Image (cartoon, rainbow, N blue to C red; front, side):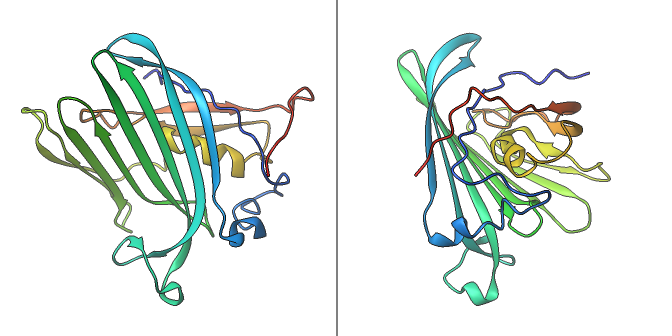
Length: 219
């Protein structure tokens, strides 16, 4: 069994009332206000085998999404609403930093990931990844890496059981908060890296409990 490592523990500060079962969290009127949720965390992340102090920023906002072009559109009448989630982290690693950004687009109606891009910049070069489902059950990943043995790579998963991106958990765990206290996911290991990552999927169990000693904040 593949072990999911490098888990960044996030305090899920709820800026909204707890949602009802299903996607009521995504459909909450708060997201129609035009405002974004912006969270900042101190983090501890392994880089080159060494735990390092890092900074993480999480941004969640609703926007119109063109399904054909797969981009934000200025013509919302011909678009679907998505929740755009940006996971930005900066990791000091000696003489230079690693700055990595994951951008995941959740369809607001279903909570499904319609697109995922990842970029990584460091003192040696840039790496970029784009994921998209093709509608026929296939999952396409395109990588552009600065590493010589990698370069431009395309990987396609076909006939794969439904899975969840590890990097999507800070949002997914919130809109599934009212589900049973324990449920299982097929979890794809984090793709936030400066190199091409294997598309490893492993069973994972989610357990949650209510804590009375946690303060809820937000504006």
